[in-house]
Length: 358
Image (cartoon, rainbow, N blue to C red):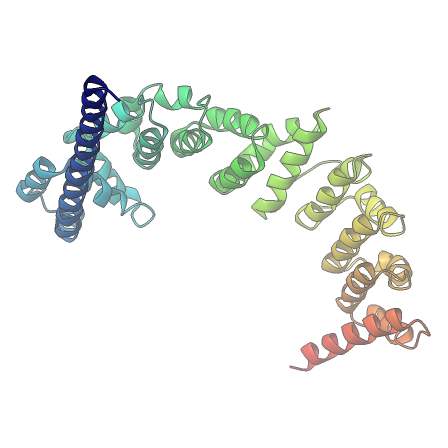
């Protein structure tokens, strides 16, 4: 190797060493900066929360809060968001007004336009809290509507949440309609947000969804209705119980205890009870027990003798919820030569009697 080649290798090695040292220095400086920020955050958090509690209690002395804003706007925003879920009404409006007066919401609106998904998520999570206050909603403008088409699922959810909190019933209906086409996770999260609108939504939007020819939308609408656990009017439920899609049949049966039933609805439940679909029959048995449908006694006895463990247990539990006639049927079937039938009948009857004697 020539002297020139040695020099080239030495230069390359030296450059590599300098690059490594520079990277180490950058990482060290960032680490020190993060530690400093963490120490500052730990020191400021209880102080900021104390001042915010005083502000919520009616204090107009904002000198300390302004000082903390100057030191770390992010820490003040984080402390403010820690009250999410614990304040409502006038107290929440007061916090929201604070975000406007001190331009925190303008910071979040700017972050909502960031290309960084983590920053956008944080921004929309904060906007979802404060946009329940109409002046904050006006500041956010059309950011929330645009975010409904964001590529990030969490951003879409927070935008939905914000709009649900501050929208008119017409907007809520549009959001509900759009939610039916979202992923299962998003629907689960939005179900709770939409629960308080169950009754007005059932007047129009839900009925429209249930009448759709798109079976996935019908199924999503039924799942949401079942999750709401609210008494709702669903005309002609029997049509859904008789659906060719077994998923729809089962969800419609789960909804039945929450719906004022007509004679055709009861007839559809009894038909499923004696059908060949064990899972649907199990759901029908549960409905019959909850509603104490004496018309189902024969069908429940048939299910108990079906030889399928899950269906037999469900039928036995349904009969146990119907004292006298249901108990008499269980007593008779507990003497069955079929051990599965006898065991399920005896266990259900014994639990019912012990519960009644307490």
